[in-house]
Image 1 (cartoon, rainbow, N blue to C red):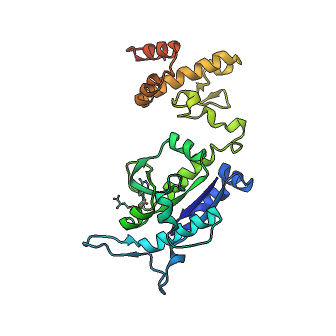
Image 2 (cartoon, rainbow, N blue to C red):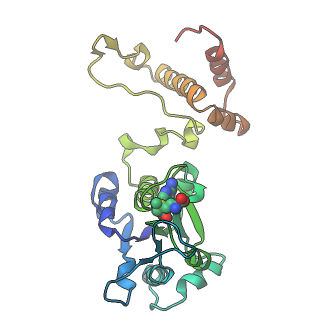
Image 3 (cartoon, rainbow, N blue to C red):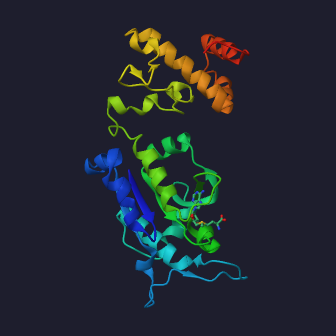
Length: 270
Ligand SMILES: C[S@@+](CC[C@H](N)C(=O)[O-])C[C@H]1O[C@@H](n2cnc3c(N)ncnc32)[C@H](O)[C@@H]1O
């Protein structure tokens, strides 16, 4: 898988390229990253990438031309084709074009299903906005998808792009070892899309708080049942929407429903 990021701050991407699980996977050649700075696609002495907004108002807007040229170059490099103007615009109208994703508060909110879809693909071009945003004509001509990290405003798209890359790369086959397996993580279909259960490690007693007995039992069935129960109870209290979704998808067993009904009773025992 390959990510091309278009950003005024390409150095920020060393975080996923060099550190932790994603860094290890990058060194193993399981994914690739290349950053493209729109400033490298300017012609003037000041390497201008922004200008004042038409209609007035605060802040600056990113120019369409350096962004489009950067995406053209990224697409040419990722597809091993000669560079040329108009590649991004042509890519947008293709049925099977490369996803050119703008990070934007106006986009679809990123979630685990989108991370999985990205991990199952060949990758994408991620475009990071700055300032007040980017000229709409660049979006209209070149952007195939807009993705948001959530209902808040970041100073730039880089942190959103980093989160998306991290979430997708860790799902690639061979990136996580067994002990780190994504299968046990929240939102995973193996867990019916529920939240993960609480975790404990040594010591057995910490400031008078003890590890739940089931986890010390060594009995795999009891441990699995305890984790499922905790997962259900936690999800029902924090994210009832995920319980509903699992129920509609037929992913809850009769025993799951019994646990949920019991947990919903007032004054239930923990
Ligand atoms: C300061 S923000 C611009 C916010 C814009 N004026 C608005 O109100 O929607 C600059 C850039 O950060 C990125 N950004 C901000 N919030 C984001 C979010 N929640 N998800 C993804 N990208 C975001 C976008 O690329 C955006 O162009």
